[in-house]
View 1 (cartoon, chains in turn yellow, orange):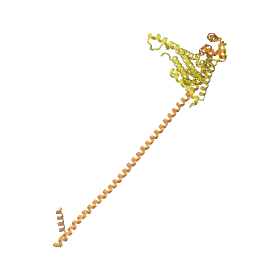
View 2: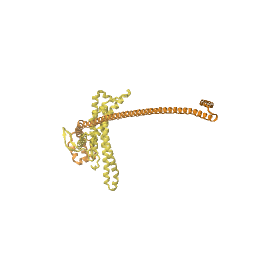
View 3: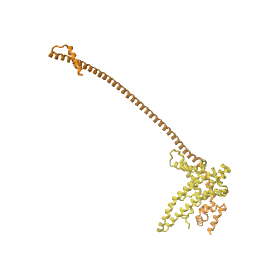
View 4: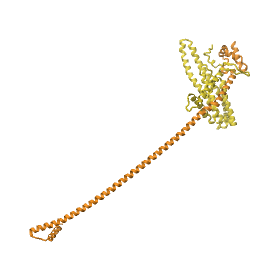
Length: 252
Length: 204
């Protein structure tokens, strides 16, 4: 019944390409792995090619490389200050990886790496662990002031602290789920509307006309999804920058 | 019945890591994948059996990406941007210098222009006053000469007038003498002269 052509979930399926088993763990090379590596290769090619000519007046590839760099650098600098620039490699890698993986997902038949929560959760945990470890390393116990905002009347400090701790703990969750859910929902929506087109065109002339509406929706949604692909990469990046700012300058 | 088994199979990997026989069937047999999709046995993003593989490859890829960015790409791009900023700053300084030089050149040009103008004015003024002085001098000389001539001429006229007047009395005397001689006979010249003088004095 559920045709592969119209099944909105099928696109998220993980297929093994090469069976690999290490110490009882199944680490097979899958379509997801393939697209992670493709993402890496594309980023590397674009950025290395773009930054290799080192011309004063940049060409196209160099403009792309420079714009990406400056975009992330400005985001990081405005959110976390000059001290945040030490995290540039991390933030830049995150942005480029998420952005490229999201954009890749827009290509038909391509697998969307960021539509799996384990991937977004791993990236979110990487950010949170970096923030927490660096926060304690740099500020010691002063990092805990993050949970006790200054200027709060004493009676409500315990309440605010509890809220701040919950907010801190929910960060990785929101970071991971936001990206994952956006990618997943967007792709399901696209596939559902595309499925309508396929199903309706199979119903003869009347269905053909009826298929126009979902077709228009698919076109519009595709444009929207490109926006979402960029926007979610940006949101992930700017939130990372803001969390890093907490590690650099705890205490509101 | 088969869906029950597939569902049971799908639940299992969460607990049992050894799921080697489950996944290949999903990959190869379309019927199994079909059933899994239809019955929602496991929604792929929530299938824990794929987690180790995804984490493993994500770690490899992300570490490689991080190293590449940190060691190669970011220094390169930052270098390009710094070089450009330095070049722009250097050329701005150069332009500033060139502008200062231009300004100095313009200032010196204007200063020399002003000096030349002043000098020209001075020369003109001096020439004008010298010429004026010369003209004044000549005019004074000419006027003095003319005044001299005028005085001479006036003196000459006065002389001539005096002589003429003298002659008038002489003529009058002679005329008187002649008239008197014709009327009453010979008369002394002195008598005639005295009579003329008396008449002319009385006339006055």
